[in-house]
Length: 459
Image (cartoon, rainbow, N blue to C red; front, side, top):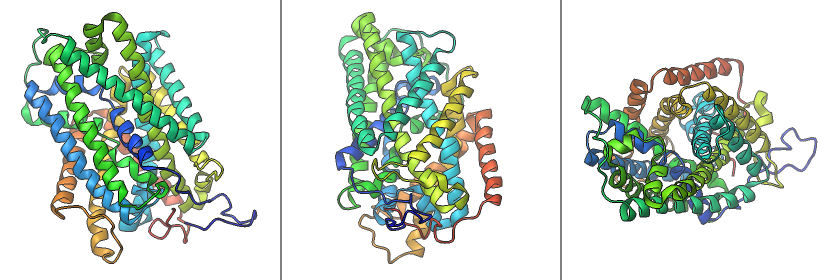
């Protein structure tokens, strides 16, 4: 990155360098919080609807945890070798050049991060509507409020955002613990409706893993604050793996609680599965309490997504003169304020679009998943490319069992890309169309010669 400028007339005067102000606990809270808030209170019903048995459902969640840890190990190597506020944007730029990097940053701004924020905002809206219904547009109204809240917190600065993230993660985990206690200890084994009728096994497996790995989604987001983490870069790998280990255990316990309390059929048919379990365990007061906790927990992941997404947009603005407004950094608050505002505006547009859909949550899933898996696959390939092209770069952390684990990660991402395209309907085409628009924009934009991703290093 550019050194801190000393002249107010410097054209890069707003391009201050991010400081190392985050500690390990902040990044761990971001990792756990962003993953746990990514649908565990919603997607288990969708997974149960596609599963042929309880054993298949639990195996899907185990596989999701293991595959996510494999991916985290790959990302840890990249983060340790190339600590950068742009995260994936920087890795893709070094491996494939500025055009692919631009499409990734555009996708994060228009599809991946903003779509995830909208998805999480609808989770918040669904549960808040159970507490205080605001009418036919209730979920959308609450979702818009959630987007505005997380944006305001992070505009106040990274210290405010990280502090809120830590406390929200505590509430989030508390909500999961209540579900586990109710479902496994207070409710007798379910005798509810029968499980869904079995369907084609290959299609069912693909659909289940789309939702499971979406629920584990966000484990890679910690790399976007690697340039702001105190201590050695290799700490990132330990933090990411520890966070995913905690999440995997929590997810298995929560799904076991759902199945014990509601059965496979009851879980599949539930519209608010965690609230239903707490209602059985603690009565109506328990259902209301868990709805509050889950609504607050959904903000955890939305808050973390806002933190990391804005950093990619900031890196993008620094590389393309026409987008330089997005590259500004507020040194007094240690935050990319302009990028946060742009991200918030697009997320609000997606929330508005979801208000006219039959299911805003499902629309966000369809809109996000295919593009997410495409670029995750490209990052996996970038690890191989950079190992070959830049063998002399110091790598404080290296993926164990190379090249086997990175190959597993790439094959999994490729399969999930196919599965998401095959099973998520018209929303997937919308995401692809957004990439096409990005390609058209790229034809009109030129990267700054000194700010291309493979040369620029922020942090």
